[in-house]
Amino acid sequence: MARIAIPLALSRERARPREGRLVRCSGPTMGVAWTISALVPDGLAEAEVGAAVQAAVDEVVRQMSDWEAASDLSRFNAASPGWVEVPPGLLHVVQAGLSLAEATDGAFDPTLGRLVGLWGFGPAGPAADLPADATLAGAPAGWRQVELDLAGRRIRQPGGLALDLSGIAKGYGVDQAAQALEALGVRDYLVEIGGELRGAGVKSSGEPWFVEIEPPPGFAADEPILVALHELSIATSGEWRRAVDHGGRRYGHTLDPATRRPLDNGVEQVTVLHAECMQADALCTALAVMGPVAGLAFADAEGLAALFVVREGGGLAERQSRAFAAMLD
Image (cartoon, rainbow, N blue to C red):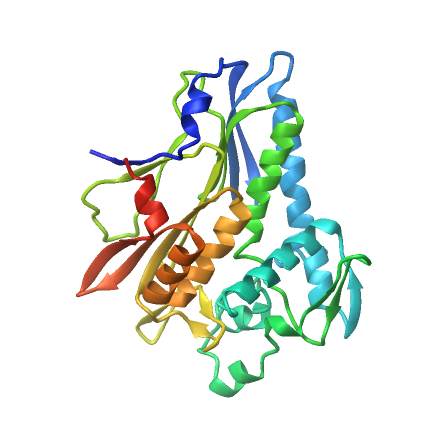
């Protein structure tokens, strides 16, 4: 039997009459796929819905992908020292990342692009050897080095710094896809990009958009957890999703800004629920870096619904924030 997590605002939606027909469509983005299930108004063609979502996520890639040499992010990373004009979306996401960096004392840091590349998780692909200590220490990184000029829509490149938005841009893409749907008059939908999701309204039956939290490999939870995504987003960051092997040891993709190395603090996976998928996405990384003790304390202090899966006693165990536990039925 599953455990059910339901937001308190859902009861009002169940009473609203349903409108529209069910449309499901998908397309490529960010090396994965976007998918939507939505109740669309009569007269709105499926092709129009798909085109609007594809355009929204394509714009995110054009601005924020370091895998695209012509993107605005790549242009900033390659720029000489000085101010660089950037589009509003990129500026907004970098500002959000820096705000979270300040709130978490640097646990989330969007300036680790050079380090990400050294560890073999960037566009250049896997590294032949582990980076040397001196190489890691010399790589430009540090969120306090970044200055923003919001009025002028500029970011100052201090010199050699590379932004990496992989821990926040996918969630932002989900939010942008949702906004594209809402601009078409769609009120009931579920959007997913590579495991990050956002839901609004309910299904035609009046039931919520339920999604199951995927457990990490080797973890057999007593009961699966189903989350009702009503005006709610969910993001999950797991070290098992992306890793490299060196010398018989496996290194996960999340880097600790303090050590400049992959995490080694017992956190296997973090799931966060938040109104904004961008925030849920970034908070997963921040909480994972903080670790199971400090991360859970931060989540409780901020009222965040978070679920940790941690390595403990030779196995894996769940740890829930108070806000997450309160949602479980």
